[in-house]
Length: 282
Image 1 (cartoon, rainbow, N blue to C red):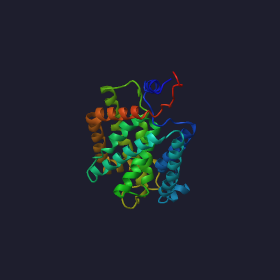
Image 2 (image 1 turned 120 degrees about the horizontal axis):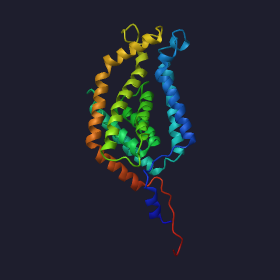
Image 3 (image 1 turned 90 degrees about the horizontal axis):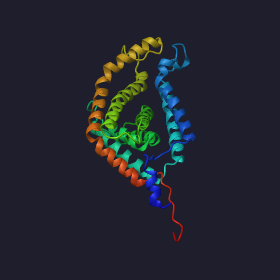
């Protein structure tokens, strides 16, 4: 088969920059499980546990562990087929996302990078989306000086955010307004989910003496859950709503053009196309 025919056959379905293999899936499941524990441990440990006794140390422990695990996942995904073309695409999109993030710095909810993560994950698949979300958040933290114990949690949460877009149904068939509506709805919900899980990461750092909505390691789980809900309503609801609305607006207005550009670039890159040659004389 000629190179042109092979390329045409491979583009009948949406190409993926990264195909997740067994090792990548296992690593991703491991880091996600540890991440869930890192985000939700205040609700999983009784007041008498040793972890609750070290409430101020636990976020640092999970942050350090997540750094190592995210690196393992990135390495495993890279081994599964992150070729030079995909690396170049990753660099361009991560740089664009990192440049978009500071645009809304200091303004409630204006974070245009989120819509780019949704569309990129949709077109390039969950494996690429996870790596892109993590790398973009890391690059933007270096750009804005936002490096701290919260960064590993941001990298993991953004990786989940972009990966989820790649797991949405109909990647090969759903197009047009129906696809845009689905992506906008996902972006809206995921923007709130991102804000909520990041609240979980920062909430335990608050001292119970400073506020009646802070985490109290000596309080029952039900009390801490009520404190957390009050904390979210009081501190981040407006920001999360702004992020969700901006993501929806940008997805509906710029989404068609960005999706076309990403899909055109993906077809031209031909990530999954094997190079073959016709036999001499044929």
